[in-house]
Amino acid sequence: MNMSFSHDMDDEYEKFIRRMNPPRVVIDNEACKNATVIRVDSANKHGILLEVVQILTDLNLIITKAYISSDGSWFMDVFNVTDQDGNKIIDEVILDYIMKSLGPESCFTSSLRSVGVKQSMDHTAIELTGTDRPGLLSEVSAVLRHLKCNVVNAEVWTHNARAAAVMQVTDEETGTAIADPERLSRIKTLLCNLLRGSNKSSLAKTVVSHSVTHTDRRLHQMMFADRDYDRTGDDALVDRQRPNVDVVNWYDKDYSVVTIRCKDRPKLLFDTVCTLTDMDYVVFHANIDTEGPDSYQEYYIRHIDGSPVKSDAERQRVTQCLEAAIERRVSEGLKLELCTTDRVGLLSDVTRIFRENSLTVTRAEVTTKAGKAVNTFYVRDASGYPVDAKTIDSIRQVIGQTILKVKGNPEDSKSDSQESPTRFLFGGLFKSRSFVNFSSVRSYS
Image 1 (cartoon, rainbow, N blue to C red):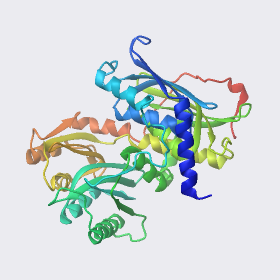
Image 2 (image 1 turned 135 degrees about the vertical axis):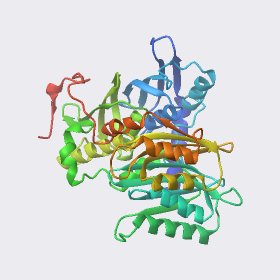
Image 3 (image 1 turned 60 degrees about the vertical axis):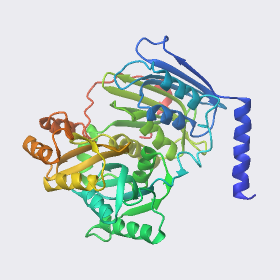
Image 4 (image 1 turned 90 degrees about the vertical axis):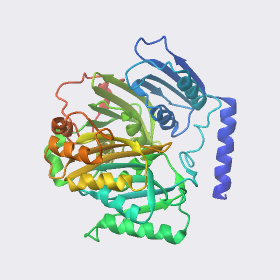
């Protein structure tokens, strides 16, 4: 059978199931005293959990608890959510958006083949992966400026000596996407050479396109493909300080049970569900809970082929990939926020000043709206020492005291870094909880 015809048949079948069983969404602000409760019932399919979590996460909602069940043909989820300040969701615009995005009028159950990807003539998307080094973002920004590219949006992650970035650029003169194939090829070649640096054998990848993707999910996929989850020799020294991820098999029910204990933070659920989905695991049941600053997650999974985790090597890979997914978004260093009128070369100028003052960027979010640049940088001293307050003061004098603001105290950057990837401390903070009687569960050892 022709593959495209098969896909069309799948899509038509999904539409038929959807018409027969439209999604049902209930939003309840009375059931819980400190959170809005969102219940979602729908026909089940692989990836639907990620799509629902992605919609809630993109609204910057905090998921404090979740109960998930999708064993069989039906998907039933309950989420307790708050805004960033810990309050219930009462904004009618947001509530209406949730209803339309998850309810019968939504398209969130469309095939994952097209999720988060669409053509754009407004900008050109550039994806970069390579070995991290001090000043890398400054170098990339300088090359783009030299090539007359204006960075309008970007997100940069670093983890385990690897770096990944998704950047949206426009032509400096026209303010639109770059269409010339020769120019695109030159951009790709120069950036790839830059990422390799002096080590021509190092792995580096540059992709240029006019597609629009879900940035966070794409960054996870890029770093996963770049194997940032592989441990270095020094990692053994900090194993006990990592997020606590455990994978065991519940043989009576033919599930693998994944439990995660770590410090809670925004988008944590998205990061773990995204990783399980992209590794082709299906979540049949899950329990998500938070206790103060800490998070407990429990997933009952099988591979998409119907089997639980089959070997110790597979178990180790799942564990390491989930640890990496949790660690990527945790930011080392001091948080700086820049807000000013956008202009061509702004990112290049700011990151050059950072580099000249021996600061390296560990994570960055660059956004442009209505002519305003709102950028967030997490920086640390390139030598590994805490960021010096005098250094920050001199940088703010150059950039502008009202333009660049410090979130937190420079003296706190040392403690921030201790909460960074590979530095979690758990002790006895968590209770032993589970959906199942673990007398029925055996580990691989």
